[in-house]
Image (tube, rainbow, N blue to C red; front, side):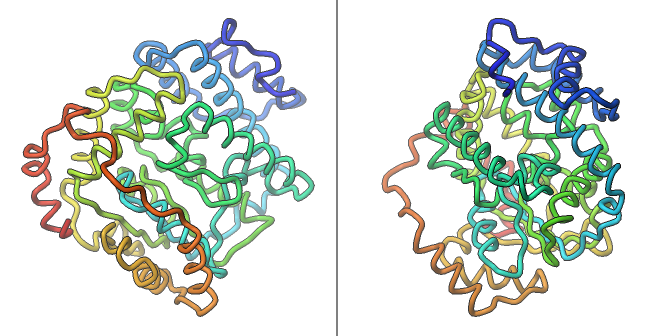
Length: 388
């Protein structure tokens, strides 16, 4: 029975003890697997209750999400306890794609996923890493991911064009950090400035250690010698990521902030609406302007976040004009050169993509209270450094 079978918007609880009790009930309640990151969850719930302006459906969506993540923690604990070799599985040759949202990270990720030598975990795996280790459950998990996508598109039809989701395609690994309730993704789903201010002061090494545990679960049954992951939120926490994955290689995407910022704001407004949260467009603009400055100021070409963590910088406009050339460069950087088969599969993927819509984007900087001249001045060093 799903959570939604027994929980209605009118009787949703976001009390921590109630959520934990419900998760243990859903997971079988036969053991007392340790639940982690509960202080972070309590911080998130307090911020949502006080700041996000959730409607009743939004409260139900959050209730379901939290219970689902706690159940996943319990299942992960059971799996690792039964198979301790999972935590010893080496994660080498890891390629991580990041950058501000709306800079081409998804396009590059999908192209790289066509390379037969790269293991790119699919959405259905990301939604249930411990369960994905059981091949018998794969059809069920794929159907559940398809239902998730269908429901998301129903709540936010605009998302279909902004950020396509597909159960069988790769997706962002914020789904692994979100299991710790310590992730910038929550500041995209909800207006929670208090939570975001708290998050900015956190050391996320333990979060990335759990991210690694979930990744190892997926690789345990379906290994890959080269793995590619992608998430914009890594940009703000690359020191923690490289501390946990010292052999990772990082690809950062770059775009003119006067184009990227309003696009990120628009996506955030759509996502908040889908999650039943208040949508204050000027508050969204203020948040992204401050957060972009935090993530982009001080960046330099080829930054290293550890002695073994090289970085490749890619401009979005180069990816758009020469996608196969840029992807070949990234493959070389990853130590996995482009093969004829990989190139053919990538070319076929490009040919299957719908043409870009003509006309303007349907939103502007002013819609989010942003000023082009201010952005030009504030990010002038960044634009000069990366030629955007």
